[in-house]
Amino acid sequence: MGSALNSLIFFTKRKDRHEKTVEKVFSTRGKFKMTFGDLLKIARAKKRLTQKATSTYVGCPLNTYQKWEYDKQKPSGIYTLKLIKLLDLDPEKIQNILENE
Image (spheres, rainbow, N blue to C red):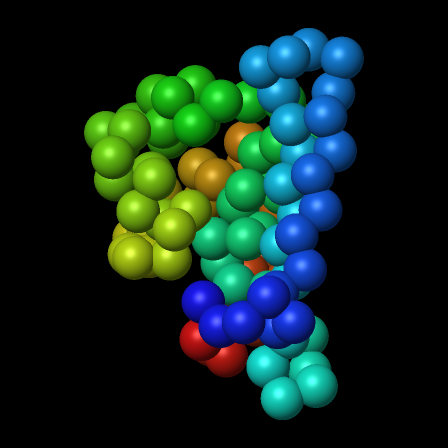
């Protein structure tokens, strides 16, 4: 993941002890880059959803959803469409991020 200087991590605890907002921004050669997994984490936290609830809605196993958030895999088309609908994501932003990874 690189040195601590290349990674900024902000945690904002919510009143509900089970929820927290995680925003990660990785710096690469002076430019900020957000991965698809980062986008999913932030959008899911804003909706106050758990990984389990999100995976259930999308219709995939929990470990598959976790692989998406950890940038180990990318969802197929139908799953991407369900994520866009559930998390109110911008399709153009997703396309840009996926093309630049």
